[in-house]
Each structure stands twice: as C-alpha cells, then as structure tokens.
Image (cartoon, rainbow, N blue to C red; front, side, top):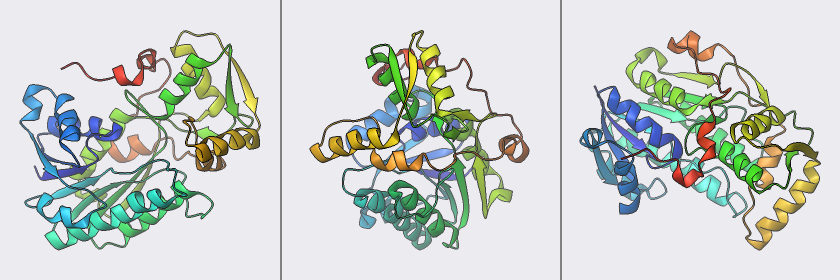
Length: 314
C-alpha cells in the first residue's frame, strides 16, 4: 500500500479519513502546522492506529515547508480548505487556491504522482462567490497539473464534528421557539455521510481507474434547507417552528457582524452560495464505488452533544 500524505488531518474530514486509510493498511503521513494539531490528530486515534501515522510539520501556504514533508510519500490526499474568511476573500484565495497550487508544485518536484483532491459540489468560478471561486480555481489547477489526479466533489457532509449541521443545532438550542431559514428554505442539498466520503477517498487511492476523473458525490436523496432544519430539530428532541427570513435581512445582519468582528453562524458569501444547487447524481457512489451511501434520516443523534464533545473516546 502506498504511503499517503494527508493535508488537513486535524480537520473534520481529515479526522475521519485517517482511520479509514489506516484500516485499509495504508501508512499515513499527517501534515500538521503545529504540535497542538499533531496532538489532536493522535488523540482521535486508537493506540494501535497511532503507530501507522507519522506527523510532519508543514503549511500549505508556506511552500518552503513542503519538500521535507513530502519525502518518501507516494500519494497525497489534499483536504485543506476554509469555508469563509473575514478578509474579503483574501484568505480563501491564499489557502484554498494558492495552498493547492503550492502542494501541487511540491508534489511535482518531489515526484509524487498520485493526487486526490477534495473539491465541492455546486461550485463555480463566479467572482461574486468568494468560497466557490476559490475552490473552482483550485480544481482547475489540479486538473491541469499533469499529475495522476482525482477530484471528489461532495455535497454537505454530516457526521461527528461537522460544520453545517452543528451550526443549525446551535441555532435550535438558542432559538426561543423558532428557527429561521434563509429565504423560502428551498435551497437543495444532497447530504453525504463523512464516513462514506472517507471510504471513497481510500478507494480512489487504491483504484487506478479513478485517475483523471471528477466525481460528484452525494447521499441517497435530495433535501431542502427547510427539511434539513426539521431533521436537526427532530434529532435534538426539540419543538420549534421553522420560519423563513428574507435573505437580504439575514445578509444585513451577517454583514454587520462581519464588519464588527462579531460571531455569526453564516457569512454573506455563504448566503450567496445558496443560489446554487448542491446536488448531483443520486446513484454516483454505488455506481462508481460499489456501495450505497447511508441515509441521513434518524442518524443525527450526535448533535445532542455540543460539537466540542463529539470526539471519539480514547
């Protein structure tokens, strides 16, 4: 099995990908920026699994740190990305786009041919959409790299320590009887279990036929924003009315929070992103990777615990 370097191993997706790769008997190199991130990576793994992981320091935004980290590596799983910034999109470009460029160039220099890249479903290079644009440009860089690449484009991901569903759960906990949804709540998604994505990533590494291909990945059904919110409310055992709010009103609050540096669960850029469908073929995973993705209904019980408590027992 190849030695696989994973960028972003301490993040949500990375924390699920590492155990999957280790279970598949891969040796893993975890690229971390700090000792604290490395400790988090190891803490989430069982004692036996820790022996299959080597921590190496590096930062995708600092290309001079990458050559030593790639020594002896045979494949790369590139997960590093941020969903929002407070810097007018500059950090999104620096990390999502230029960080990808740096890893690709380091891989080419080091002779690492295999490159699996985590993109996103429903993104396009529209300058009005800072996150989508940063990710779309990164995908183009990967496809033009000349490496043996695979691009995986998932819809919303659910599972312990996720972002989107935990944000909604926090809104439900704070809401005095009502939960707002942007616009009419009809924005469409195809939620995918992060464990299924992790399995697809491992299979992509192991199957040469995935080289040079892009896969749109989603779960077994399409959900609207309103339906997702109702599922979260049900998972929490709560009683809430779901109330549509005009997107311009939410955008005004989000814009004010960003200007003042205050926390707010959604960024203005993310509200714009709701105008794009986040769905793909319903049968893609079973057709291309040979297993059915799991249904989300009744599976969000982990949201009853705050995000900080959704860590595996060690």
